[in-house]
Image 1 (cartoon, rainbow, N blue to C red):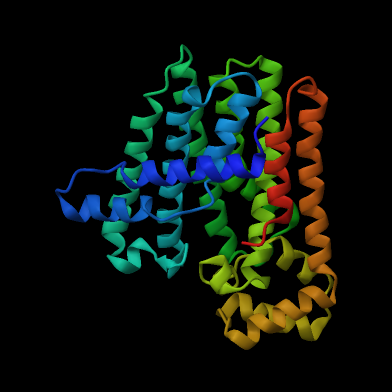
Image 2 (image 1 turned 90 degrees about the vertical axis):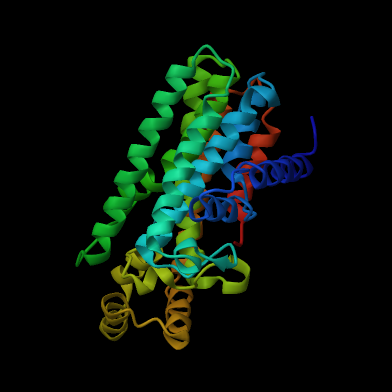
Length: 326
């Protein structure tokens, strides 16, 4: 078994290289230049690496999974481009977002081009189950759109509870990470039990991933995280740590939080105060415990159903989420 950390890095580098070359057409420039810009931006590549590692875990090969892994990453980038437009974010991976570098119309078209490109790569997968894979891929896109719709609705909602929030992130984030692991299993010709276990594993670490993302949006450093710090607060989003803080903070703090959420009062001092409150009321620790709970559930999915397989790489992926800082 290859060293998981080193192998992850090797796969990520290869994906970076191939995505940077994925668009070779030059005309019209306002379609293809932004697509190249997006795909040349280096990310964590968590989803495509997960797909490949899931495939190999059940006995498939790198070649079996690679085109689908590129499709998953291109799909992910499509969601980021459109998400940035809707949230009016300024930065993505330390660079200007597409709609800020160009404009909203070009960014929308860029996203459209990326989703078509994702299908082009997906269709290169050599498998007898290509129709099933395309169906699952398409259904995942619909679920992601549902999650994004719910996310926008919650910005203006006066109250959002944890169940509402979890339902939203299961669609918006959980589904894409889940389908990455599931498609890896299908392409590796896994049994239905193994595929279901991989799907559930991806779903649980997807939930953990988004809760972690929401926490880092407030407590991280903008230079480290590579995007606008406090952007969720500015949009009035009720994320896991904010919902938990609203449940326990006294009236003075409650009035301050409502001002932040309702009026976008997210200057440096406001973000610093929210960060202090999250620590003061134990919300950071509570949120991290919730992240670990979902990761433990993900690992249990593997141990209960895939115990006979070499699981080192997938275990490494789960620990990456537990310990990530950006």
